[in-house]
Length: 150
Image 1 (spheres, rainbow, N blue to C red):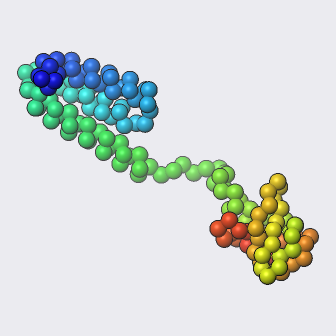
Image 2 (cartoon, rainbow, N blue to C red):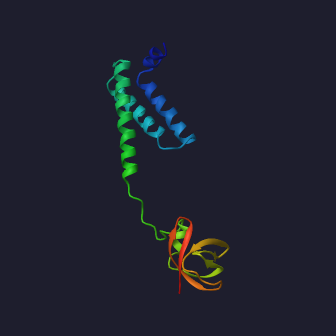
Image 3 (tube, rainbow, N blue to C red):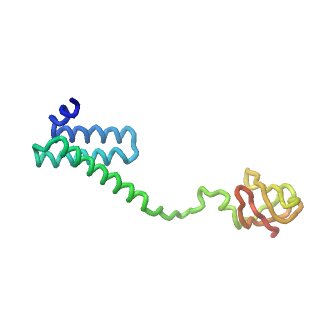
């Protein structure tokens, strides 16, 4: 019954569905519904040019176009390389500390101590050093800074 009602609309039903899907994409963006809307619009245009096709053909053409557009978009989106940044360590706080020098807050004893970096205190590992020793961050281990005396 619903299929018969939709089939009676023909090409204009597909164009109306395209409009609904494109509005839904605007309301809930995610680049998925836009491709279904494009497939519905293309199906509508095809069957405006080639009227008289049954709902089975229309649905088949829509399914093929929808699948092709969605798969094509995701293949394009996932294969794009990320743009190179002029600040590659912007959101990599620990990695940005490697090579920098700091003064130890708490002495490193048995290989473990604490290091103040700006307004944060980080766990540090390295050779035993008294408090106040200047150290260079040589690496990271999880969320712990690996340091060596300067």
